[in-house]
Length: 140
Length: 100
Length: 138
Image 1: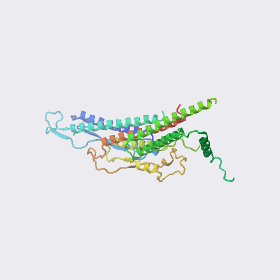
Image 2: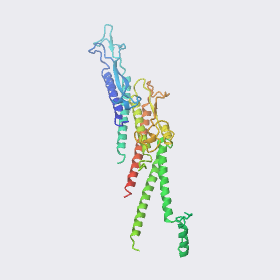
Image 3: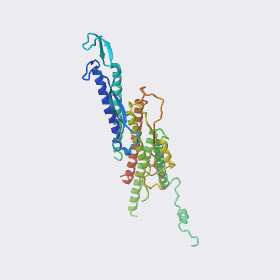
Image 4: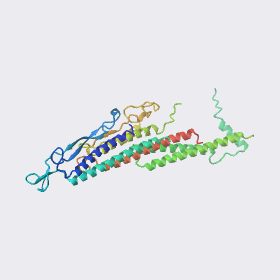
């Protein structure tokens, strides 16, 4: 049991939550984007997490000890929101504009959750560090 | 060997001699007794500390401060005992150096 | 010299440190996977097993003579491994379908850390005591 590699568990989560935060930021930035290079309005991005081994040497750790990683980033492919606004440059013939299906409140909440999770993992890493320092003091 | 037990007869002889020469037996504790008791107490405290450490770590006792106090008591007792021993040995050496 | 100058609780505390370290990893895993879909929190326990070993009742790799070394030299505590399980808890955490409650895990990791540091301190003092006696208190 290596107390130093314990920090890998927490740091895997930091990476994953950062990626999630990026996706959320992208969503918030593009809340009103009606035109994208791929065509059509911006599609909401979300990340899917998966447990993954945190250490290279898996023989010495138990299988229940897992880090996390981003499995994939998916684009929302549901129908876009239709808003009636004939004066909009991207309005269709009947005056409807296709807007991204992004709920700002949802994204903000998600962002807070991601930030909180990030902080929790920072604490977990600090805890590992303190324990390692304490072990160093044995016999000093 | 016809049951002669020379060593066993020593305390008896000493007592006879003492009584004859009029030397008083000390009443109350001798230094040896005090020392022996103190060593026993110290050892008892070491044992208690060991029990306390085990009890805390196996969950029997939830009180961290009980364990720390028990360890400290054992520690202080051991240090004190060591000093007493050192002083006693020094005193003995001094006496042995005396020209009689 | 057959007397084990490292007697007392050295082997016991060494094992406690191993187990607390592993438990720390388990709790850290829970925290890292708080948002992973389908993940249920793992719990590690070992105090009962440790107690059994301390009382000499532990089944498994036992030593016939306390002076025999196990892999760490911890003798009869060597076989204590602790057990990890994923109990189905009723709590829904924060209701996102993942039962991990980050706040609870934080409390757990904090308690485990304190207990780890306590054991490390006890071990440290044990060695200090031995060194003191070797120096004859001078």
